[in-house]
Image 1 (cartoon, helix red, strand yellow):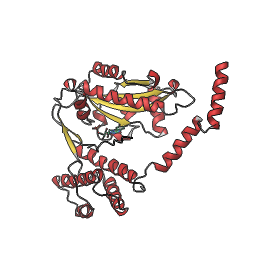
Image 2 (cartoon, protein in one colour):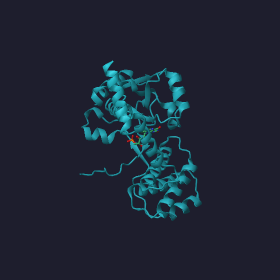
Image 3 (cartoon, protein in one colour):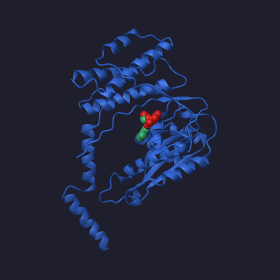
Image 4 (cartoon, helix red, strand yellow):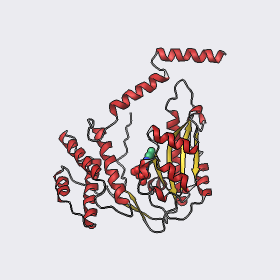
Length: 324
Ligand SMILES: Cc1cc2nc3c(=O)[nH]c(=O)nc-3n(C[C@H](O)[C@H](O)[C@H](O)COP(=O)(O)O)c2cc1C
């Protein structure tokens, strides 16, 4: 009883000082609506950067597919060019890494289409008219299956893990996946509460049904051999302030799982759980996920194919480091 009264008093005091959980979430939602970007309607330089990277990433993904479809993604190509034009018109710096990488992607996209016999003079003209010059950091990357990740040091492991979207047809040894999940258990978490859970979906029909509710696996989802769903349990969160902790701990854990899968010699691709309510509801029903668990990430897992695999280059910008 005494603890209930104490909790009630703390809640009242928190609300009085603007620190109630609804106020914390409300403040976040207001900031989110104010600052999160909408493609082709960006205002801040940071919004342009994010939107442009997102758009050229779709080109990198399309260029990485084995069964390349010349001229794919017209809508995103148009949005990307428009965004670069808007960015320049605002007077922002066209020598920024992301801007030059976007140009690099567009040039590689045009060359790749031409290799496949698709020549689009209009597109070429529009891209050539853009300010700035391309770097060499956009496009695709070849990943070789011979990497011995278990012999790598930490820096090599971080640098050489890549999202893989083309797998061999060979069945994944589920014990390797379980080993990776056990390693990831060492992820730090707030007060060591380890609120995460991983479901391994092995049934092929279930994988297909779940993936049909996630838009980011189009073109390669059918090659995924095991699908992981990572969730975090809200019942492990303290009600007076930890509104976002499940996302933080769950996200950190998801990264550990990805690295551990790589370490165990398996290819993997993180798949976003930023879903519509309908998609999330469908996945919850399919897998019987309780309401108390939030969806953090899906991860597609497969064996590396015997030959080199092409994936997105996904170049990294320089680290932001500020010493205060
Ligand atoms: C939270 C999150 C969601 C992602 N969602 C998708 C997705 O839906 N589809 C996809 O192909 N890749 C997805 N990715 C993979 C990213 O595209 C990839 O991590 C990024 O380009 C960096 O490349 P790398 O993983 O090869 O280093 C996601 C990654 C993260 C961390």
